[in-house]
Length: 450
Ligand SMILES: Cc1cc2nc3c(=O)[nH]c(=O)nc-3n(C[C@H](O)[C@H](O)[C@H](O)COP(=O)(O)OP(=O)(O)OC[C@H]3O[C@@H](n4cnc5c(N)ncnc54)[C@H](O)[C@@H]3O)c2cc1C
Image (cartoon, rainbow, N blue to C red):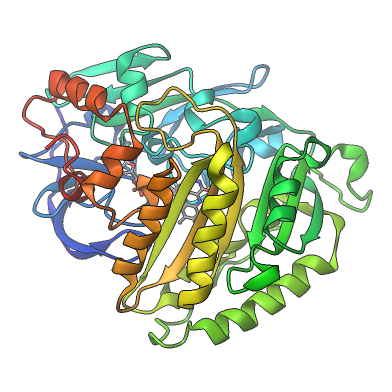
């Protein structure tokens, strides 16, 4: 089939979700997956732009926007296997399939991301310790390669494991098959437990007695001294029909909530240690108040999605996400050092989230490895880049690595030391994309296959 004629549009100062860095680029927006094809000398797929840094940016190149590739292709209500175009979002899937008793198997903290973006970052959720990454639940996908050919990649193929976590550098994913998870209701049974310090927080995350399908801990990263690492441990399970109030007429639907837009870019000084401390107090009070309750999946998984454009809260300079994983053996010590540095430097993170990862998957550049992962959102300020270089030293000296989907600033050596299969990835990329047609600002910054 001939590729459809596509209008090329100039996009100035486009960013990722962190709004740092910005890039001038061009974009095409194909209407049909069958017309998906590489465009120009350098190109890259872009979903909803929820990667925080420069993973979905390509200065001077062409972005292939997948938002119109949003069709469902097949669904088997018996097995819960769905096939859909790569621009279908997790929100689309949840709206269509939760009422039929099927939930997405792995979800990041936003449902506003595409299947293609979830595969390319091989995203993880609060259930990684039980169910692994997104690609664990993908039997196969179709991808358009640099020469315009289409290939089906199945688990076990090099193309599959290079693409899962490969940040769009192997090609344009066009269609995916996904095994959904059966649920009886759209509700979650949730338990909150306060923890007084880091040891207790880690104990809650790792003790089998507190285990649940979904676990995560929010950390008050401004607390220091003997309270360092204190927070709230949150555990969730999909609620059974018998656990949801009889007053809920349809337990497989969630109430419609109008998204509230964040009204403006806040000035740079608005988020500072004092305001974040105040936020932490309120958050701690609100979350610690209820210890066991039932809520709908939006409230449990996607509290931030309720505020449209919440990234404007960080003002025009944007913010940086910083997410590392450390192996189980060094995670406690490394995380203590990171939290101490944050607390001493008064570099408050608005949201600091600690999760447990289970065994490493097979994606060559997939981020999760067994251990603990900490994610921080830090407002952009002078000196922040140097400060994060210091955190990199702690992470590397404790055998950890950083997450590319959250990154906007790590140095090539940091990537190299964290990802031992980088060589295999680049060798394979060369075999399917000898001219380096698929490229990104992140790949250029990190010297990834350059
Ligand atoms: C509030 C929030 C919470 C988050 N929480 C988590 C979390 O808990 N766990 C987690 O793992 N991530 C998390 N993320 C990161 C997010 O899930 C990933 O960055 C995801 O890739 C975003 O999907 P997207 O469709 O917006 O992709 P984009 O941001 O547009 O692109 C991300 C990467 O995917 C590639 N890509 C996109 N579509 C395709 C395609 N069709 N074919 C090939 N490559 C493609 C792009 O080239 C780029 O490299 C979070 C992000 C936000 C904003």
